Image (cartoon, rainbow, N blue to C red; front, side, top):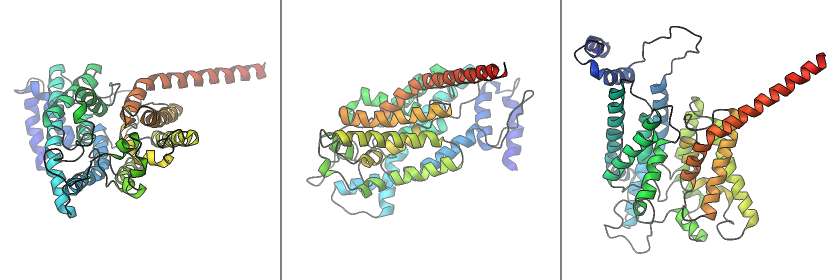
Length: 388
C-alpha cells in the first residue's frame, strides 16, 4: 500500500537518532490513527483483540454523528422559525453546518494542539481520548457561543480536566463537562437564558412571540402547560444545545455503542431508571406544577438522554464494578431530576450530577469491593466451620 510504504520510509527520521526524533510522538499519533499499531507484548498473559483505543474512540464518534447531524438541521430550523420563515431540510442542515463547523474546528485545533505539545514535552504517546472530547464539547454548547470562549473552555478542560491528572485514562472528571461547567460559571449569560439557543437571536429581528426558551427553562418557570408535546421532545424540534435536543438520535447512538460493547448498558439503563423513579416520587408529592410533570418528560427534556448515553458511560470517570455501575447510574438520574425540580437556578441538572458522581465513583467502587471481600470472607469462614 502506497501510504504504508511512505510512512515506513519516513519512520527512521522520527525514531531515536533520526533527524526529527523530537517529533516521534506526533509521527506515532498519525501512524496509529491510520494503521493498527504493530507493537506486541513481551511477557505476561493478555487478552488480545483487533480493537485498540483509537478504534474505540472512532466508534464513539460514529455514534455521535446522528445527534450531530440532526442538531445542525435543528439549528437551521429554529433560526427559520425565529424569523417566521419555512425552510427545507438541506438549507436548514447547511445553515447549521456552517454555524457548527468553526466551533468543531476550534475545539479540535486547541485541544489536539495542547495534547500534542504535552506529549512532545513528556516524550509520551499522544492520547486518543480527545477524538471524542473534541466533538462532545461543541455538541453540549449553545449554537451561538463565541469561538474564543470555545477555545478557552477547551484549553481549560484539557489542561485542568485531563493533563494535570496524567492524561487520558487518569482524569477524574469528564473533560467535555469540565468545559461546559467552566463556561457555565465563568460566562453564565452565554450559557443560559432564551437568546443563546437560537443562532442570530438577539442580533436579527424575529417574529413577535418567539421566546427561544428551552423546555427546561419553561418548566423551571412553572410554565408546564406551555411545554412542547412529547413527540416534539422525542424527535428534537426544540431549542437547546446542538447535540442534546433529539432523544431519538441519541438512542440511535446508544444502539451503536451497546452493540459494539463500547459503553455499559448498566449505566445507561440505571440513569434512565433513576430519573424516572425520581420523577414518580415528585409526582406523588405534587407540591407544584413542576412536580406534577409526567415522569417520562424528564427523560426527554434537556440533555438527560445525551448525558445518560455519552457522558455517564465514560469508562474512565465512571464506576468500574458491575454493582457500582448500577449505583452510579441511579444516583445520576436521581440527582439530575432533583436539581431540576428543587433548584431551578440550574435548570439542566445533568452536568452537575455527572460531575458529582465522577468524584464519587472511586468511593462507590471501593465500598462495593469492600463488601465483596467481606462476603467472601464470611463464606470462607462458613465453609471452614462446616468442615470442622
